[in-house]
Length: 106
Picture 1 (cartoon, helix red, strand yellow):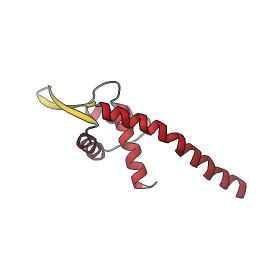
Picture 2: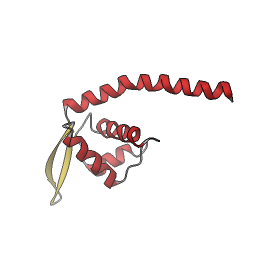
Picture 3: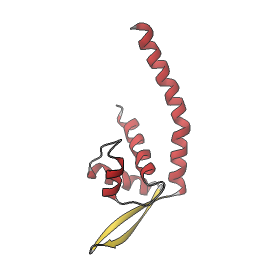
Picture 4: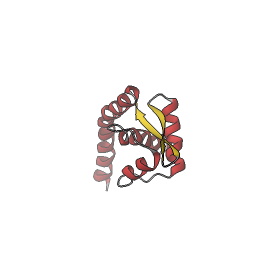
């Protein structure tokens, strides 16, 4: 898969994981696991990129004597999810075109 496409899909997937409720790294990985497997290092790179892009905010909360970072989606992050949904229709159209070509020539 094209690295830029995959990167975009993973970014939106992480935003979707926190769209209904603030969450922290380990929980995000657990929530996404049935759909996407992410390493911690990949997740934290994505979270930092999304924070820099102002698509999420971070707050630290003490939990069992340690600080845990909770991530909260911003309006800009919600708009990115909506943009992805709109763009996905175009992606599906392209996919159908590509699949049709393979079916007709196969």
